[in-house]
Length: 277
Image (cartoon, one colour):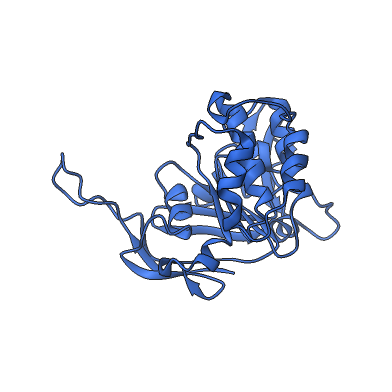
């Protein structure tokens, strides 16, 4: 489990403005449990990417601690670090062949699977290419995410993984993730592209300004609310609504006998940020 306990964090003083930047996190608590795919959501600047970097130990908290299976990530224990893999939103790959890249990096991950890597690349239709540096950004993302899944790291962190992917590739991404989830693996996906991932996520975390706005399993959300479209004359009991071409997209309490509905994550996000949930 990833345990985030009472952390505070802010970036260094803004040299141009000569003042301390506002805290991104202040006495913040959150846990990520095994066997879940988390959607980490929030407006720009709420700390989604920062949180992933803190979990990975690339940034350090000013106070509080982050634990990976009971070990503080700042201890930089190689065994603990080998359980984590971060796919950042922006990155580059070296001027190496895939074979050389794998040879250079796989030793750090004791459960690395060449079979998973090859299967993922095949699903992404990327079985034959030259040096990694010659790939397009979308292709690099596919290779890097394939390598990430092949590490079999227990905690896989992805920052905006579908940015730069075309529509068929987004479907392929969902497929390779679903095929390679195991019972003890935790996947945390920071994203604004919620429609790309609605079918994958089973837990929603929404960050506000230095606070946690929601931390709830999708199953609980589906049990408590219905997400549907209603005409303007049938809005009784609605908690939150947005007009659209189909009438009104609404969130309402789920009553006895109501059928379960898929979660409209964009609508949920807007409701939470407007203080309706």
